Image (tube, rainbow, N blue to C red; front, side, top):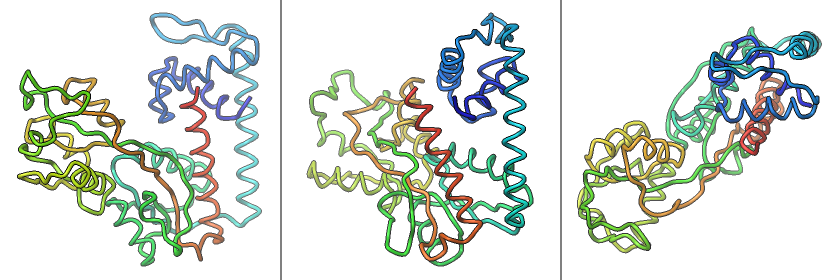
Length: 303
């Protein structure tokens, strides 16, 4: 039994619905349901009655809720005591992130920081992974998310997630005779406008690798520096382009785009800071919290 499972259980019990709990916890509904099921199996008790109106506690669930709240309160007291012993952490933390792949992890980190170091002020700067890495090296940011491509000796980083990159196009741009398998007609696709992320981004690099491998250069390129803009342009039929796999599959499930071919490559997302600063108390805390969040998120996905 893990404390995060108890936190999920208490949140579902208080909200009365998996949907509301998943929003509060920044987890998917299947992940929340899986953790509740795992907790029930470990305890050998049914904690909830599932109804069309939501989740209501069983008599056993009411008893376990009281115990779970006591354990979480003890955890909170322990964190408070640890904060008192280290003199408390205050000041400003400057975090860097993009608006795509790291958004969920960033939300969880901010929630943990708010609970663990409530006196800490946090400021956010959004940009490409290359922008974040540069800001870290220049001292304009304290910590942030970037990709494996930006890792250097000056930076200390740890992997926190990974994502794929896929090619997407609006169905309205494709003729009825177009076939994506086993190999798409790259020369025909080259005639379409391509929506391109900046050259230094992971999607920009993946696009350049694709052009070299397939020996073509698009007739027209349109640059967009945010993934939600790339998605909007592709969905509206402006052109073809690359999206991170979660975004691509969500757009495909909603009928906005059609995916062409398999995942082109996997990109590792990392979280880091300047190597020479990694032992500073504030950064020690942030790195520890991020490592815990990454582990819990991976565990939730696995279940």
